[in-house]
Length: 83
Image (cartoon, rainbow, N blue to C red; front, side, top):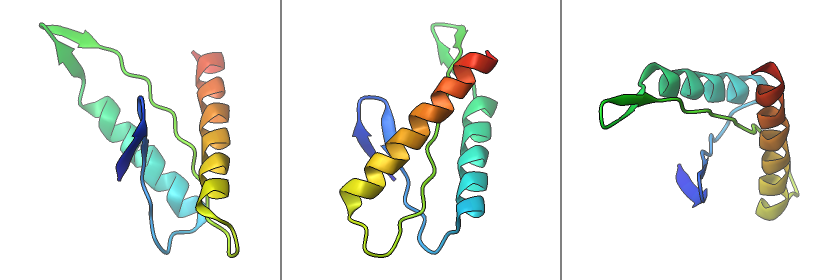
C-alpha cells in the first residue's frame, strides 16, 4: 500500500482475481466507514471510491495504473449519482 498523490492510495494484491480484488476493496471501504473521522469533536463524512484492476501479462505498470484510475473515477461518478 502506498500514497500515489493527493488523496489517492494504491494497494497491490498479488495472486488476486477480479472478483476477489473487488471484494477486498469493498471490505476496505466498509472498514473506513466503520471508523468515523473525528475533528474537534465533530464526525466528518468521508467518501471513498476505488478502482480495482487486474494487471494483465505484457502490460506495463503505467497502463495498469491508468486503467485502475479510470475505474476509480467511474466508481466515484456512481457514488455521486447514488448520493
